[in-house]
Length: 410
Ligand code: UDP
Image 1 (cartoon, protein in one colour):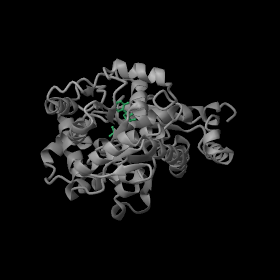
Image 2 (cartoon, rainbow, N blue to C red; image 1 turned 135 degrees about the horizontal axis):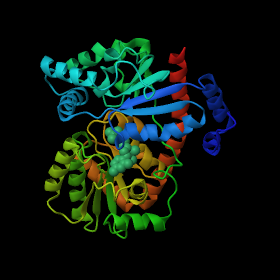
Image 3 (tube, protein in one colour; image 1 turned 90 degrees about the horizontal axis):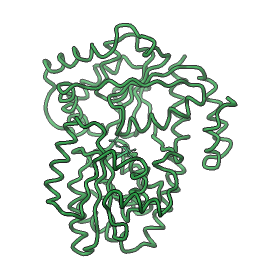
Image 4 (cartoon, protein in one colour; image 1 turned 180 degrees about the vertical axis):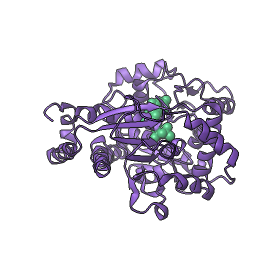
């Protein structure tokens, strides 16, 4: 364990006792190999989470490997319908034929027996898309399913679909206590609260000069007020409402600009492209609306600058299990104007370190208030930062994560 300096750098944020507890827990699972399976290399919360966790756990001699199973267009279509039902509660049933086609496709995704590449002591299957894997490949044991979406008010048919496959998992992990299917899972349901790493390029301190350069690189005028939402171009992130709020604010503050930041890593992500095109139309060529989707322009440093040096941060998601972007912005001293979706309403304390409202008018009022009263904005931003320090930094997630490994490793 003497070769674990990465973790030591958190001591000032979490204290020595907490750090010691992490080391103790890590010792109990030292040497094990964990394989995480998900559907995207980069982009989105899962990739972010694994990117943050892996260097630290590797350093603790807990080996992490990743396997990405990229969905083909038909599978993508099928699983998009499931997320709409699970997350959006959208009515409908899952056609048996499509389900069978998807299972046949998934059956080809891994070998019948693990090769060196897949061999591990514990498996993590991320998100609803891949949940049938543990049934299809009995060698994936012990295995943990990790649900990342907002399942607070799901369609019952979609829940039945998930329930059919969850039995093959030792644990089912959710990122928010309100998204757990408690009545169905009993003790196997666990909550792993996500944390961010304050030392990564996305979250570390960034000087105002560098921040300004980044904004200019994104085509933004750093001298004028800026409202920003960082989110994939996805229907549940509700970029349209961010535009509505901006337009109302602009009537009173004509200098204001808007950035919608969703770098698209996969050029063939049809869903994201369709939403981006729709949002482009909605923006009606307004030169003060910046739709930032090019990953060559919007890298981690630019996301950092946009979150840190915007005047006001919005997160208008209608569905969100846990919004990493909210935590990231709060860490950067920003009070976030969120919604009553599961993540925002649990991550933000209304009136103390941000605001919660689903209404466009009310959210506009909060935006104007934060734009005009910068002392209040600063005071709430301090509270936001402190809230993240106490609850949402990576060491807190790590200790819970190690407990999960411990409980299935036998
Ligand atoms: N993100 C990014 N660049 C972008 C947009 C998003 O790096 O242009 C990151 C963002 O900083 C966050 C993650 O993608 O770390 C999104 O996670 P979140 O939980 O907010 O949403 P998800 O995409 O998982 O629904």
